[in-house]
Image (cartoon, rainbow, N blue to C red):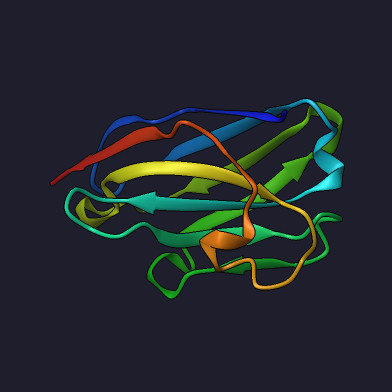
Length: 124
């Protein structure tokens, strides 16, 4: 059973930055494509970003394009989400997830394992 643990969330002012981390235990990270999703209060969970299992390709939602960057360090079994120029509408619980295979990574039902989430709050 894989375990995913997110960290790095917190309270930040608009325009600030945060870097989220997702540590994976169990099978090595290199076996999985990884994604980040978020859910704001009263909203559906939405896709944020994903990276293929070899890191050769990344995907990013239009709402965060140019501001967020996903990366992975398989030696550390960790995937990251660098978030810059944060806006109040980025406030949400952010979840990382692991998927086998590199297709349709924007779909949440592609992912087998999920972390518990980390809260990001952006004040105006």
